Amino acid sequence: MGEEPVDPETVDFRRQIAEFCREIETYICKKNDGHLIRVVGPSFDLVSGWAERGVPLKVAFAGIDRYFERYYRSGPRRRPVRIDFCEADVLDVFDEWRRATGVSGRAAVEPRVPGPGSASRTPHAESRRPSLPAHLERVLTRLTAARASGTVNASFDQLLDRVAVELDAARSKAGGLRGDARAALVARLARLDAEMLDAARDSVGPDAFGTILKEAEEELAPFLGGMSVEAHARARAAAIDRLVRGRLQLPTVLFE
Image (tube, rainbow, N blue to C red; front, side, top):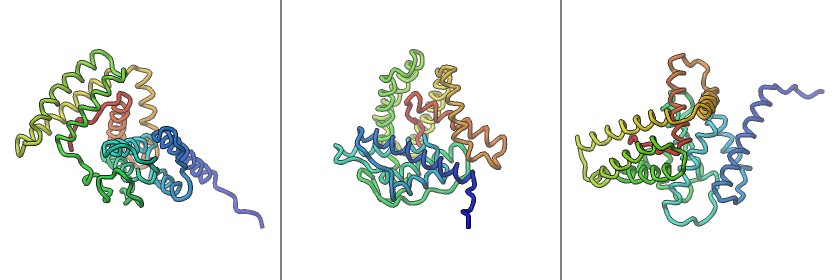
């Protein structure tokens, strides 16, 4: 008896998953300063699950980055980070991305392995949500890094400087704010974030913006089935904002 013919779509899907896993393996090795971390066995199954859920590659990278940021904040590195430790953050960022873009998809599931540097054994984003003062501290640190990176032009740098000055003043009193005063500060952070993103979109050159548009469409492609024109436009705008923010290494000033 001959073998069953293989569906070309199935072959292509498997190829995409394998490529996704290779990209993740390359990225986690880079984050570990070149230390070889193989995505094989259970780790391959784990990362394959991200691809099957439709986690965009750049979203997975952002989740890995988030884990490493927390890991470094917890003290000196003790050993290389396995990809399994990053799952909660990858799925958290994926959930945030889905809420921002409005795309549908399976909800995040609990990670199988809690990693070092995790603030909690629970995977939910709420459990790792920083306090308002800690959020402002992190935003200021990343604003300083963005300005030092050379990725922003002079006029946008002036805006970032103004935002940094305002946030530094807010940080000194954020811990004691309650009620309406705290709500007012949170609302102000949302306005600053929107202002910064508007200026960021204007500061990106046409070639770079064309690349961003292409990446945004690629991120959304697996989710377009059944999406209305209006929903696609909202999702596309949210994906563009995230990619612009990433290209310029900008923090999220918004506090949710």
